[in-house]
Length: 116
Image (cartoon, rainbow, N blue to C red; front, top):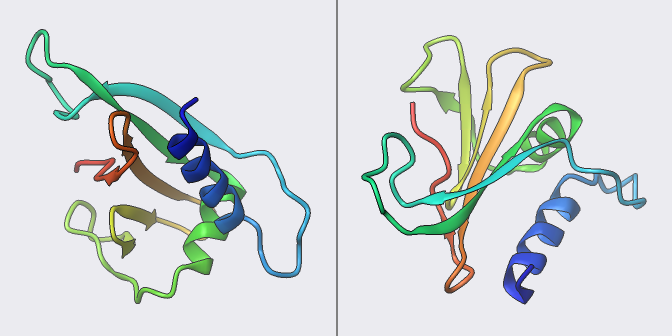
């Protein structure tokens, strides 16, 4: 793991820890390495970013910790979305929250990590 990637993952871990619970917890979610085109990438497109998808308590903690006002999702009328830069968290029910983010592997910068 590159230094910047490690810092980004650590930052997400800190976001997922509420102020009253200072003990680090395991992240819930998935990751994968992919290319800039999230769906149906052209053959041979360079896999240059890591996509992070947070779920469960991790995603709920991040969603609740975000200061952004929730807005209706363009993808699902029943869902609410909060955004902070490229970090996007979607709540479709009290228990169903997902957060997504991508980090480029060449420069360690954030990028959009989801599509409808």
